[in-house]
Length: 80
Image (cartoon, rainbow, N blue to C red):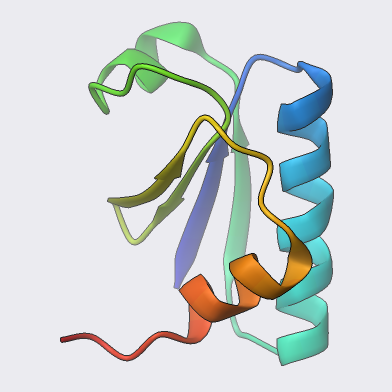
């Protein structure tokens, strides 16, 4: 699993990154966490807000610093 936190370093971006890091640890996931701060790469996702959470190249959240429980729910959700 590859997880990206897209953000330019704002407080919400840093908070989301730390929250995702904690969720990965608590869920004991085998995941690669990437902090993407390159604005050109972020623009490739066609999103209108930051921070954003991307899992396996699928955008799951935009413009919000999620809570730990929200992140855990997104990371463990079974595909539909």
